[in-house]
Length: 585
Image (tube, rainbow, N blue to C red; front, side, top):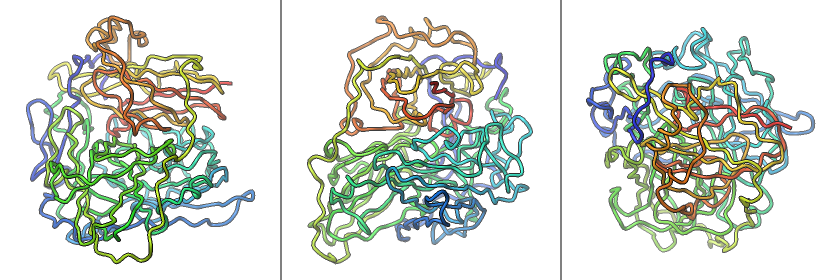
């Protein structure tokens, strides 16, 4: 956003700030509390919409277009269209895959490759959120076309050429392509266990806007072990993609801009984080689902730009209600646990997923609400508005039982190999740091390792080796970190002294200074603690809490090449909080 000399480091544990719409107006969470500038007109207050009057939509399943090299071949077109997101809203203009939001769901099988041709068919003269487009961010500052896209299947274990590298973008009819673009057709090997993946736009510097416009969909991998578990399936297995939005009175998408007077040296309209006052599930605002008194399997995705969801199911539409309905989590992003985990609440950061089973047996005639009480920003921001951000969807147990429920949750789900730290060849210390405007002190950027996206010195894991990455968070926000290509396990977390660490590191100037130093005994404030029970499976996105080091272990298998790792708060990712790494032979 600014030149390197225009940034100064924020004191450790300083809030990154957020623009939020949790009531009748947009208010800044930044110091001074200035009111955010609207894009065109004042937004609609979402709490004027009647909740729970629209049924939950279920994305249709994507069908192959034919065969290529003996495997299923798909074509997916990205288009602009209108769709009703609430019965009291006019149709909303969106971008989406195959003319729907969310896109169609891919149903694939483990070790059975597929081919996909992603086709950008969006009018190149019309960027949907043009007022929020910031030409000063990385990837947008080179006179490149605004209407460009690239698709990343989040969690896919694929060759680098098909990973959806942020600079492998393309325009309509592939008329223009980015510097790392290599192929119009992607091959997904599906060399993975059964898992809940998803696909979304990943264009450098504008992911937050392209995803906000609607470019997201679900991608499932199934295998024989899953089939043998006798879990709820068919119409009793339901995806729940959670997102938030702001709307104009005409139904249009509304994305707030940052007032120029707030940060004098900021050149563009980028905002630190986005929080909407309308919660969508599968593209519908505050829907309801009618269920039978039996077990259901819900695949829950946090597809929001920045919002954490701390959800529970209770008999009252109040996030503070303590009478939560218990449920079990059976899997995280990259597959099943060893055994199910009993829960009453579930915390999901942007990009994280959870596979849960909820039992409505014996609850005929009941009404239950999925609510959220995660602070914005998380964890030290303001409480979310219980009437807007605190409401998610409603379950009504009013359908007759169509047959005996023979599904079950086995006590042993799958044998999960544990990666032992002793097998790691390399341990890398990675650090998260924030920077502020030198005039106002407002937070305006965050970096991984104090480096920008195009930093030429890359981490280079060797193919087939195991590494430990220590993520050191010197900020006040929790950051969901996503590593492309690999699945990993969380080893532990440990409190640290971020001020002392930063003083010893000396990375005070934006994108300059030494590489992160290794943690010393003097930086540690307490003992290590184990991850939560529902964090002990295979993951691809993990929460790095403020004032802590989070340790993860991964094996870099099968493919060499350049991949990305980044914060999955999309506003952070778009403003340099993303680096590359290279897997080498």
